[in-house]
Figure 1 (cartoon, one colour):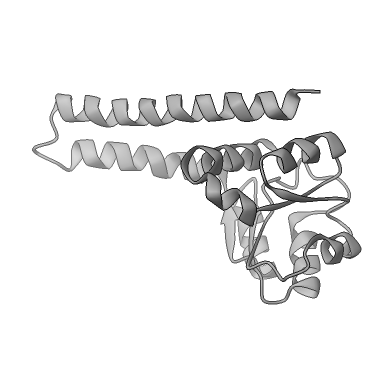
Figure 2 (tube, rainbow, N blue to C red):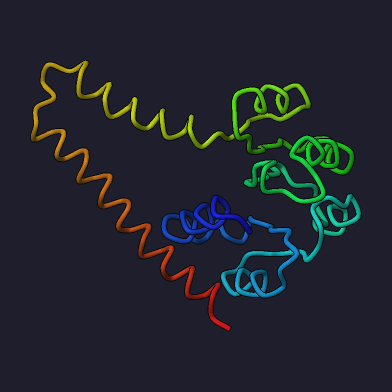
Length: 173
């Protein structure tokens, strides 16, 4: 259960907790999974490299499968291998995986990924959004920029509360 998955669960917990029941997590850590179950998330203990684990994980075919861990942190499989296994078990599922760089993203798209997450790209997109609003608007004054930054800070503060609560649930023995 990697930090991106953790933050994704925190986003759902803070904004649309009723959707947590639609998430299914596969991980090898029974302790983490038991805490996720307390939040209403269904879970399967197992190795994501195993097609048997995937088959056991879902009684119904998932519409989206997400791997939030880049290859540099995966053990025993790559995101390309995850794509291959998911396509074998759930051929209709949309697949989102994670890459460390543009070359890795290109390879994952060729392998069949529907979308590839890249943290640097996502951060750059957010910064572009902020700067574009600042530089391309003649009416975008300092007070409006402060409002935008304050809205981001407020969202971050709300997420800190959700991640703190989630962290307490995940770390509690």
